[in-house]
Length: 264
Ligand SMILES: CC(C)(COP(=O)(O)OP(=O)(O)OC[C@H]1O[C@@H](n2cnc3c(N)ncnc32)[C@H](O)[C@@H]1OP(=O)(O)O)[C@@H](O)C(=O)NCCC(=O)NCCSC(=O)CCC(=O)c1ccccc1C(=O)O
Image 1 (cartoon, rainbow, N blue to C red):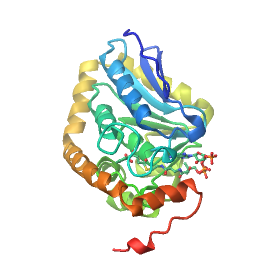
Image 2: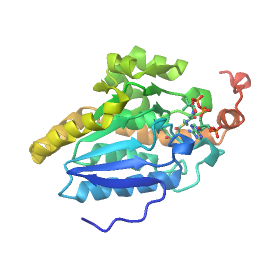
Image 3: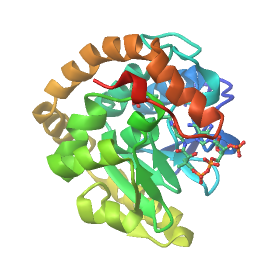
Image 4: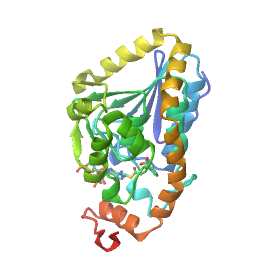
């Protein structure tokens, strides 16, 4: 195996033939900053290149959260690193799609904001019965137009996707299963055993057939990559507005945002 880099925000582990990529910021409910995304990209490159890896498990440390999206304490306007919005979110979203191995979202808690988009992008999602799904974008001055909206609509249907994005409600793992956002729900204590059943099964399948199947599923929704890429420049401009900054400040100050003066 490639010599592993030293990671700070994530953990990379090989468990049999599965690569486990664990976002390790549990105090912040596994919210990500730019460094986290850079490390996730590197981990997926390593897993993608490793012939000893048949599948990739993406998850969060602890039992509170899978991932709650961008670290709201790490930005006012742009985030704190490289990329169009100060974090190379588009590169990580792309590698989840492009790596020629199945990616499993192991959702162990909150999958909110950009974290919900990660789960949406993964090939398969398995959730603990304690997991909670939802979007917060319009509540916190953000949006993921493209993968977050249009791909979500492919999974759950257009009306439900609009509901998720406009009303920002929280959904249980069972509700997420019923709407097609999740493949399987298991008791929290059985989550790892259930993930292992999947990763062991995938390890026995033809890697080329899996890669071809993944590419063909992707091809049918590939136009959404264009929407995502083009929209990211609009999101950058949005993040620079007082309207977006009000959403971030309100979250950090634990109060309701006041967006009334930005009415369209
Ligand atoms: C997750 C919650 C629903 C949990 O609520 P609750 O149980 O009431 O607990 P809290 O007290 O709110 O939270 C506990 C603790 O965790 C901290 N925390 C939680 N989430 C974050 C976060 N994202 N950033 C920073 N800190 C966080 C919280 O402050 C608390 O800390 P204490 O010290 O104990 O006070 C709820 O927490 C919640 O709704 N969180 C907000 C999630 C959020 O706003 N996420 C960002 C959404 S925007 C985003 O993800 C954009 C980034 C991005 O990916 C992107 C960029 C550009 C284009 C597209 C995208 C894209 O979305 O894909």
